[in-house]
Length: 208
Image (tube, one colour):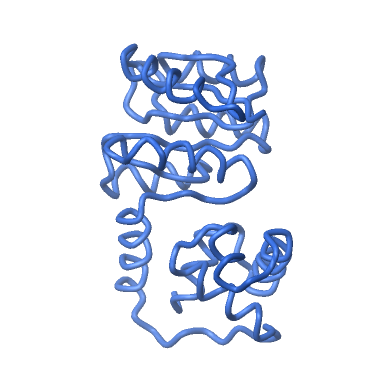
């Protein structure tokens, strides 16, 4: 079971998210919080695998709460779910340690997929958000791609698909290899390229 903590200041939003999650056999909602301060307290007590985090809340906001939760328990995965997809919310959330960023107008299935992907170490992003993230970085540093010394042919294949925003499962299907093998390649790629997370690895692949 994937243990999930829901954080949103709107009761109706939380109720809808709970109904969606409770209908899944592999997801358990272990708690709800309507502000960032309560989210930090509950995360420490309930030890969720994934925190679905809103950003704009009274008192302690979602970005501050994300930073505090991960400072106490780095293994927790914080998945942002917000109405605001602009850069002023995206980049601070990533800096705070969020593993993914989804918009509230996404189909319900995308959220469920995002929770599952986050729980196994993936970084789920709404496609438009990921494309904008990569494009902004590309535009900011329009330079020749850096060499990637020591990469195998298969690692280069995986790297290209990471840059396209594919999940581990999608990469495995595309290359006809196991998900565990994909994870091994990504770990190796992060080490060889000095990328601390999947987003930075995608940016590396784009020559940023």
